[in-house]
View 1 (cartoon, rainbow, N blue to C red):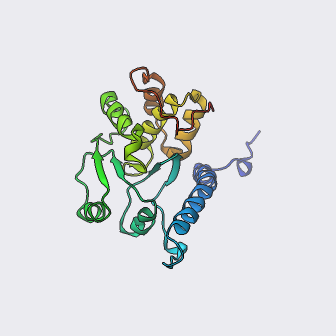
View 2: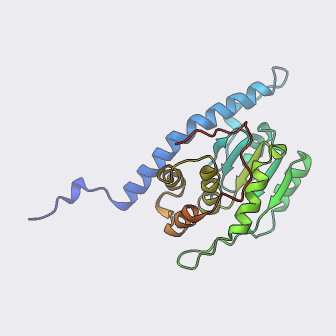
Length: 214
């Protein structure tokens, strides 16, 4: 008996479906953030919200915490409206000059934690580095903070996943969120790292964080 291949979605269709589902879930957060940013600008300054372009894979993680892929100059007006105090950058490469100038002009502090973007099976995620980055993210004095790597998938996903463990999310929910952003590029090694990450040595979450279990 021949298999009915017409009813079986191709890998490309599955990837597009995953990306569309992730976009649907994120877009509400983006639209809300834009609305809040525009409102915060006040009536004296006209702001065209259609010109506010969020970085790739942008989303709100929690109160005062955002995540994304690498922002470029087209995203600067959007980021400016977030009133960021700091950026947690998870790549080892030097920050581009244009981005550095944007940080300086907006008094945004850069915290760089250089994690190599290796591919499986040669992936080495330094737990100590993730732990130090978490301390920065948890410090409300650094909020609002944006976490980003290159594509906002693996390194950012691991850091956010470890934060979710601190928030007492169950592993299935942690992995589900990771997979929504990583899509077809999800790595078993990343999920294994998050599963084994020991949160006992990280200080307790501030009361301003959402600590509900997922």
